[in-house]
Image (cartoon, rainbow, N blue to C red; front, top):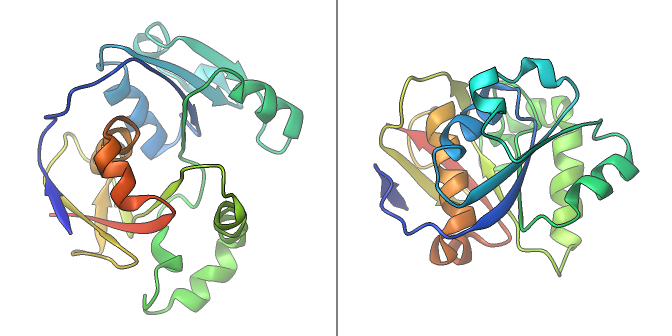
Length: 190
């Protein structure tokens, strides 16, 4: 389990594409990401008008498309070095962490998420990590949070800002990514 409370990483230039950038967590990723020098962000959305203008003007590219169209997604990935997907259930994602009570009920509600995890598990040439937050809450700023492999490390809540911070940390910090590669990671806000 780790606990992170502030940006203390050395950032490097990187091309990132964000899927689901107009949702709660995706918006937090974009707002935090545009403040990172050297991070070139492309966002893939159905409706670009939902991106605030102050964020949109700092993005490298905005691609309009649907994730249900394989060609749209494939074309959007060309030239990208990292992907953050904020697609999924709007409030609860930890149903796939082993031992989560009532997970069997939620699994039926998030079968698409299950298929994504199953497909990622088969991908040997892709480094991936899946953040599994419990109940997602909006928050004004990044606080203290904890992450743990295959379990929920604390409270049954995670803020959008904390989830975004951890995902951005993973794509930039090789050591953090190596610890969580090919893993389901529970995240809880303090």
